Image 1 (cartoon, rainbow, N blue to C red):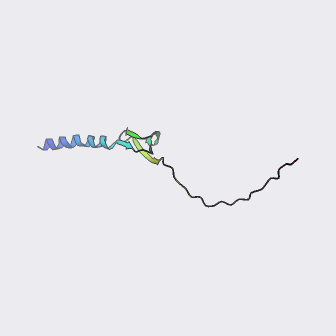
Image 2 (cartoon, rainbow, N blue to C red):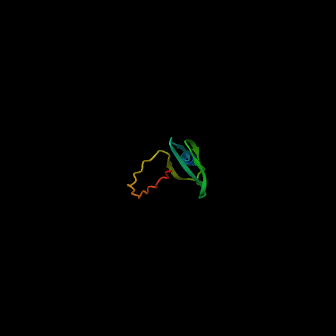
Length: 85
C-alpha cells in the first residue's frame, strides 16, 4: 500500500510540472519569453508550452489601445510673412 502511494506521488509531480508549463496567451496580449535570462521569443495569441526551469515569462504585454491625457502645451507661434509679388 505504501509503495502505491509513493508511486502515485512520483507520477503526480512530473504531471503537475508539465501542466503548469502549458500557457494560453489571451487575445490582444503578448508574452515575452526569456531563456536563461536573455530574450528568446515573443508569444502571440494561442497555446504555447515553455521549457520548465529554463524559460520564464518576463513580461505580459497588453496590445490594446491606451488613452493617455497630456497636459495642455503652450507654445509661441510665429507667423511668417508671405512673399507677395
